Amino acid sequence: MHLILFLLFAGFCLAGAINLLLQTHPINSALSLIVVMTSLAVLYLLLGAEFLAAAQIIVYSGAIMVLFVFVVMLLNAGREERTLGSRAARIVGLPAVVALLAVLATLILHIQGLGGAAISQGITTTEDLSRVLFHELLLPFEVTSVLILIAILGAVALARHGNGERPAAK
Amino acid sequence: MQVSFLQFFLWSLLKVIVVTVVLLMAVAYTVLLERKLVGRIQNRWGPSRVGPFGLLQPLVDGAKNFLKEDLIPASVYKPLYLLAPLISLACALISIAVIPFGEPSAGPRHLDLFEISNVNIGLLVILGITSIGVYGIALAGWSSNNKYSLLGSLRSSAQLISYELALGLSLVGVVLRAGSLNLRVIVEQQAEKGIATWNIFGGLQFIAFFIYLMAAYAETNRAPFDLPEAESELTGGYHTEYSSMKFAMFFMAEYANMITVGCVATLLFLGGWTSPWGNLLGPVENNLVNALLSVFWFVAKVFCFLFLYVWVRGTLPRFRYDQLMNFGWRYLMPLAILNIVGTSLWLAYR
Image 1 (cartoon, rainbow over the protein chains, first blue to last red):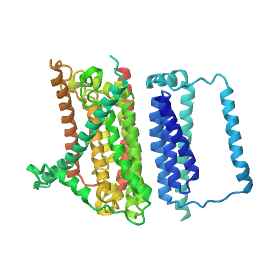
Image 2 (image 1 turned 30 degrees about the vertical axis):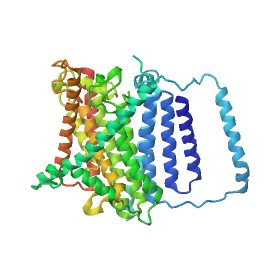
Image 3 (image 1 turned 30 degrees about the horizontal axis):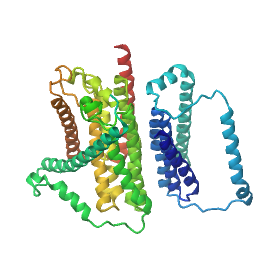
Image 4 (image 1 turned 60 degrees about the horizontal axis):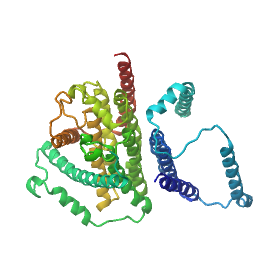
């Protein structure tokens, strides 16, 4: 049962990713990305990471992708023109991607001590997850939040800067 | 006692069918309730011709929507135009799956009777599905290729994103108190002394309840926050170009969302299926009576919430757009964060 679900949603994920590249209309690409994100959430769930799955849906499929769609709608971006690209890219592109993926895959398979994850019946509860985050990895976790705070401050600074200049220009 | 997969599957299927039918009926009669109540508020009768007290009105409305001509305007972007109402309605119906309606242990052979699925992270599931529901409205407005629709859906997306934050933050206090995201645990924790331990009173979460109420009105696009479909300025907003059953699907999604929001409010703040005296009076001897009583209390609380919804709609004027954004970001958000800080301090030092 778990294996069937895994194959199904891994298939959805890949199909969404490929469709994302093939579509010429930005909104179709954005929607394919939502499919990818949501199937990823199901894969997390199959690994027993229920909180991560919910967070994936709320944060990525829900919030971030809504912003993407929002921007596409606001700019009313039209259909992209399909460029043929350079001939070198067409010849070398696909083999290069395959080679790169193969190298990455073998590397990941050979590295020891990454820890394993398997499709399982078990579920990691939110309690376990928070114990890891707030006891064992407290410092990295808090430092990450500072990083995000810096990003927010940067965005605010940039936005304020833009507004401050406009009256001066008049 | 273990149940086989087949038994579990059939049982779940049965529950899904029953709950969906009941929910859709509830949606139909919520519309009637709203029309009747708003009628009384405006000093008129509301629907009264079809059946006794207009009770058959929802069925006639449904038939009318089915029989209407299904128009698809020429310049819409068809795939998304057709997909949008489906997304809206599906998201509105799915979230009911994790809501427990009554005493869960009442079923035969340890199968839950009053909840389709008992999820550890039930609350997050509901929030996640709500956040996906935005796409229905956003895509409907965009794919209609109509300026009013687009304006409506832009307003709606901005409004939903802004108020979802306040909504999520307002629930953190409740989760802190219960120490769990499981809706069943949250309810059972409130059952101890009945009304005195409900989160809204004994749990001191009335500020959170107020924030939740405001955010829920905005999330479901209801007055006084119904800017996305403001008839006087946008001729209906995102569903301007929709007709027949497609319009009905948006309509049903809106009312199903209202009911879900009411269920969540009941579970998180009003003690869910437990009676106002909670565990102070023990359960009745008869199991069946117990089960029915728990459902009765749940439905009664949800009904009160829906009544409040309609009451507010009937009495308050619509906000202006900038007022809406100001209110969400400048007042509700900080208030919600203060509530979290306050609740944490109270829990740590009591």
